[in-house]
Length: 139
Ligand code: DQA
Image 1 (cartoon, rainbow, N blue to C red):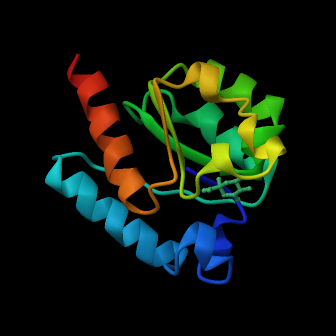
Image 2 (image 1 turned 180 degrees about the vertical axis):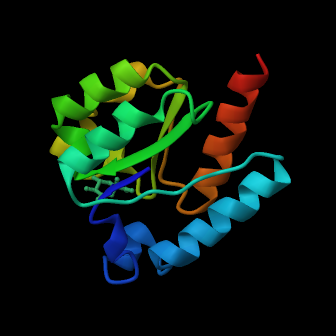
């Protein structure tokens, strides 16, 4: 699940986010998933309420979640609560190294609900996140 402004990849600062567009990133994610024999469904919205509604509806249709909520990560407690309701194993992913940027990016309101956080590894971070999720699902 990609959150706010992730649809602008390709137009955002490549030093932090690389050069791929969201469609290209999703293509890579689907490829990583295939290697791990996982099936992924990608979702992006700039609407916090749509993101929350998606979390409300996800239980029963997915085994786990990869989540890059974008800037919502740092303040959207409504997303924290919706993730808690979803009650699925989740991995937090960030393209950039959120812990070595501005102070406000070091706060994550979803981290306590996630089995792992992967940041600062760009697109490869999504492979790592899928590996972490897959291991957790295998028990
Ligand atoms: C991001 C990091 C956030 O701080 C930022 O607001 C984003 C993208 C990342 O993938 O590095 O929009 O989640």
